[in-house]
Length: 251
Image 1 (spheres, helix red, strand yellow):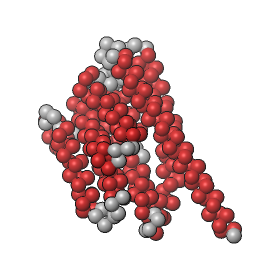
Image 2: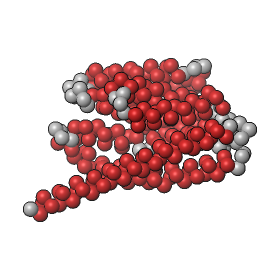
Image 3: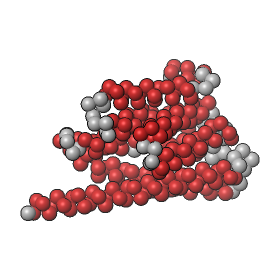
Image 4: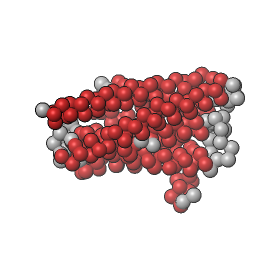
């Protein structure tokens, strides 16, 4: 375990520190890195930057937290490192929720998603103190595509006026869609199935109330369903775009 992680583990409540970190990154992105972008694109780009700061590090941290716990199971108590990763992610979702409330208050879908995700993370971290193994595996599955997705999103935002962005978008779309489809369409549902099978057996009822794990499963199920719908629409759009380009070349 590195020195920085040990120092963070020594802090009784690192959540405010993590939130401040994301807030500073967001402000720098909005007012410095993307100051030349349009007022419409700057908020989305800034959100992508804090997502980049969260996604890939969260995957590595979650993997480390899971592998370092020899007693890991769906009902095992959270370790200090697992709680640290949960705090790191809670801070991100709080910051991104603030972003949506300020710039996109009518985007009920994303606001609802963030609130539901925060409910899962915060109840696991601060209410039952168990089940982090399952939540962190789901976090890994959710964020393993983060790097590719955020670069794709940034390229998509500028592809109409920047040729390089258009090329990056075209290059990334097929592999990103494929990876996202495998993770959200197959690996995610399979892990949720294992999660449900364990909880239905009653093995976790003494540490995680039934209503709570059922609410976790419901939130994850809805998130996966929306993700599958989203990526399906993107595949359809990609097919239409490629078909249109072929027709234009023939002409």
